[in-house]
Image: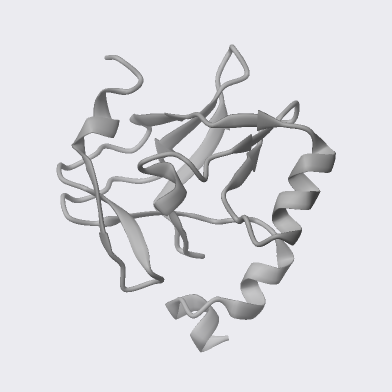
Length: 130
């Protein structure tokens, strides 16, 4: 299966988590590759500058910073502590969004952003009960 195949089956719409979100239009099985995370490759200094300006759409693949702010879909993935997707490296050091568990059609795709400050502002069920 083409790594970008499932990307065409994703849609952006209003999210109950925050702003806009990324949603699946089909059932996705655990482990399925959903999309390759592409964007502008930037330096660490540029990453810091953009983050200070409010850009929250930057991923890091242990080698490069990838600014996804100009993408059509991945920039809309929201944080949830009970996430259903994960970001992994492939053999070519690309970042791949994969299904962490089975995902139902219509479900919002989420990841754990993985930085400490996110948990201070998180309103997911797990954080709300803590």
